[in-house]
Image (cartoon, rainbow, N blue to C red; front, side, top):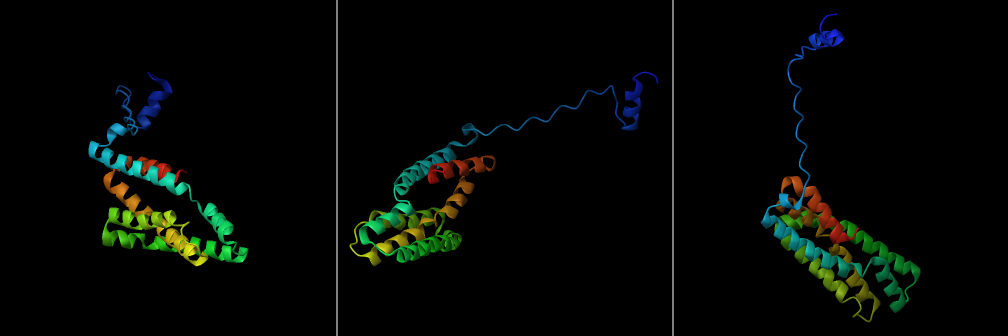
Length: 181
């Protein structure tokens, strides 16, 4: 078969020169680290993460199940009334999220995050003050109607301030800190 044996035949068939050095492998992409984020972006993300961690701690103390338990203990509504309140609250939470993009375009990302989340937090703070059931339920509806309106603007804000290669990691960090999941 000659020099190289069967390999020479394969090389000729594939038009490969056996004397050429093998191609150099492509360098592996560098894993993401904090050093890949510019200092201004890191400062902005650090402030956002600190704020969301504080907010998550506060909001984590008032989950919907505990809120409904509080309503049951304080006002003793029937199970059907409590179920109607819970269903309406969850519906409000889901349906108002549709408007987050429109609000963010009109008022800006940060303003939308602040001015939808602040009243939601104030509603939680005032939740125990009313002595009648309808007013307490109204505060619950304010909280649930506004509580998710900051999520889409927050994701857009992170995408705007994060470098392209770090966006997924930044968003995941903020989700972990903000939602505690």
